Amino acid sequence: MTHDYIEDELSRQSVFKSEQLLSIDYVPEKLPHRESELKVLAQSFKTLITSPGRTSQKFIIEGPVGTGKTAVTKRFADQMIQAAERRGIRLHKLHINCRVSKSAYLVYLRILKEFKPKFPRRGHSPEELLQMVVEVLDEEDRYLLLMLDELDYFIRQRGADILYDLTRLMDDRLNAPQRLSIIGIGRKVSLSEDILDSSTLSTLQRNILRFEQYSSEALYDILKERSDMAFEENTVMDETLQLICDIASDRGDARYAIELLWRAGKQADSINSRKVIPDYARKAKADTHPELRKEIFTTLPKQNSLLLLAAARQLKENRGAYITMGELEEMYQSVCEEYNEEPRAHTQVWEWVQDLNSHGLVDTKRSGVGQRGQTTLIGLSDVPAELLEHYLLELLGR
Image 1 (cartoon, rainbow, N blue to C red):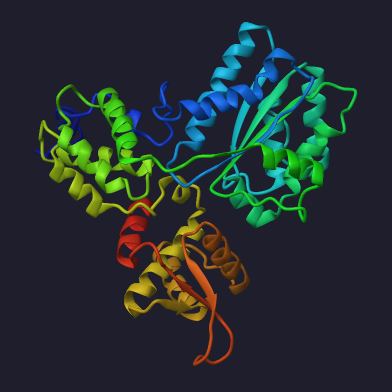
Image 2 (cartoon, one colour; image 1 turned 120 degrees about the vertical axis):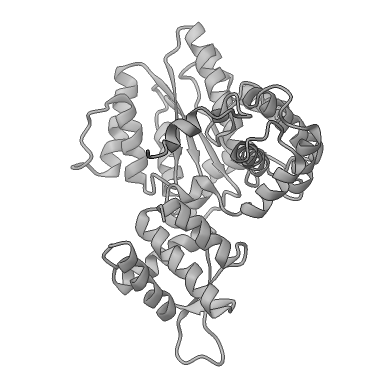
């Protein structure tokens, strides 16, 4: 008789009570050690509630990965919506990841489809879409709090025209209600007179909120609260939480700490342990890497993932710091054949390499002395090639 692995797994006991509460997408009600940042946002945006339509707000939130920028912004936006509803104000919130919506056209279309879900994807320019957004907000007497996440990535790729267009859109409405307020989120959002007018630049430079890395003590408070919500009672040892904080404190990265906690719990489940002991956290650290960001990899198109897999394999084989574009393309052809995908031409591959570089997933530089001709060299400074290959094989289902 065939063994039923599914029923076997479903009947197994777990240390988790609500595993989804350790997801990177989950935003808890309480955000320890970010109360002051929430207060700054509340003070800055309260006019959207006290005097709707009188002014629009523009704000930039900066800080390293895993410092709570997105979580704080989303929690703040939820509280703003609740306050508006209590006062009969039609305030709407929308969070857009600029790694997914990679052009002004896609951002404006995403905004418009929030209010008109059946609006067609084709047939209009970005300028027309933006004007339609304003018309919808006016017609329905709505106000929009727009959160542009990964804005620094977007500006590196496309420039800051989108900021100029969105801010000027409201500045030009001198005798009409101000319908749109913006929060831009990124590691470091580059602002200069080359890309923005002096008035907008001045406003944004005054409204920058910097998130610092979490201390080890702050990470412990975050993990303890999340552990109490996600795990069964008395399953996670306090020493395990302390160890994870020690591991993650170099970066002050709460996302990395939470992922280590989740992986430690999965390790306990895999061997039917009812305790999440420190050694499982050590195993979790060995199995992952802080640079392997789920939120980045899950938004990569399959062809980009295949190209990255090719780079990892070629670098692992060469054992050098860099490979050439020619070597990468040769391995890429082989990887595409393995996954039954049609390989793309050189120009497209080169553009993808630049995109992967802007994501921080590969390093690129021009070849120098000792090499014939000029070519792009590709390397990995943060992630071991073998670890990256293993990670991508899991994501690609091999």
